[in-house]
Image (cartoon, rainbow, N blue to C red; front, top):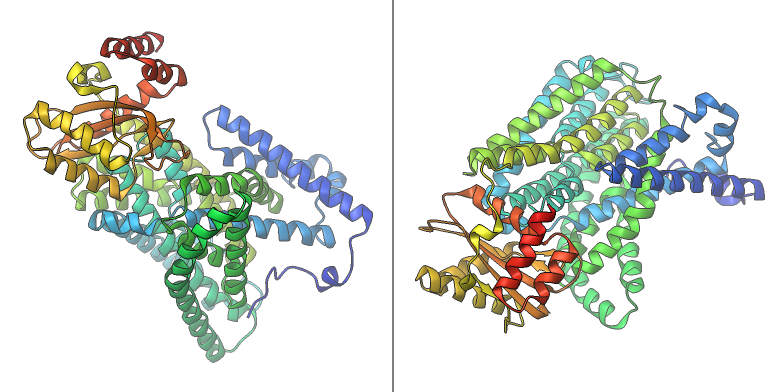
Length: 593
């Protein structure tokens, strides 16, 4: 069995920090958090992921730059042993635990089930191909994939190659759900059918990938403790059995208990403090259990996050509050700590970086594309799915950091993994945009008419709003509204279509529809479409597209986003008294663009 924070010295628990150690620790955390937040904001301003700036902060403060320029200052702020070093290690571990908590909150199993075969197809093929190629290369040609022939303490070479190969397979097959979700949200594609398939597949990738990594950790734990082969096999079986039992209980009994506790806490507790305290406590308890049974603490937090995130009583606003709290404080600290661990110049291996990058990109592109085609998606959509699934991001870096700490990989391979994770995150967004670009872009005005605008909706719920707008569309199409409403509502049940900024985009693809159609409704009172920002939707845009034209839906979503993305245009539309006033607001937007 392992213990929580295995690097924590017994003397630290028994003794106390002296004033200078407290001062040093506070200065180190302040430097990490302040510089990581500063460079993270700078990265965002340059249209890059904030994680890039946060890791750069660690590179600047670590042995790569500060350690080379001023070794004494670096040694003072970030000692390699002693109470301050142990405290910083504990803080980094806590940050990783909380990062996996919010990753778990993003995994909505109900969404995966509703997507069914399509999500399963993309997830399975996009994992099998990278895992198979990665495992085969690492097991057959370990040196080619960066295996350090010097075994970790207590582990002989044969025992080292198998878990190393399994790790490479898992590392190449996992996908960065938070990165993909952010990219699709930025492109206003998260609510599209292509977007929900990608997010669902990424959820399955993360879940299966972390379970696979848990098995790898179980394999190396006995060896590092010096156990015999028989003891090792027994302990691996015991650890895997307890892990599966934990997953089953948390996702069933735990989910049932959370579904009953959350409404009570939200009704009687202070917001957001009560929910934050509850979620964090449950995550830490789960983390403590999995660390105790020999699986890293972050896996327990991840499973608890899934169970809590799948409670339908948990509001999107609460979810985002938890995400903001952790993402703005603990995430920068964790990613800054990455740069403190290794020298990115001394341990940089260009050949290994190229090998990891090429294998990671090609295998994931092939898996994502074939999986999407197998699911019946068009060529352009399949290409966009493949590019989206390439993104690795934070999840890959956390995986690599844990493997490095466990002595499973070398510093050179860890740096290659970090570079690959960042690079794939940077290319995913532009790649999707390029693949889905329309050759002959149309304007929102081309889809509108006075008959397709309802400026005074009577609906009070999302179902009533869909029914009201479908009635407008059905009258123009000369169709029965029932089947159309059923199709739109079925799609709404998969993932709510509130996209934030007081906008909702309920939609469906219909057979025997000649041209795409948009019906715009305005609700002065606002209607709850479960938007990420928690705001009710006042502009509801019903999008109907032909079943045999999968890219039309993406085009309409893009048009809605482009025309209603700024507050000034939305305010003009909300004040519009007539159809001509709405057109005037859209024309002003077009002229400004």
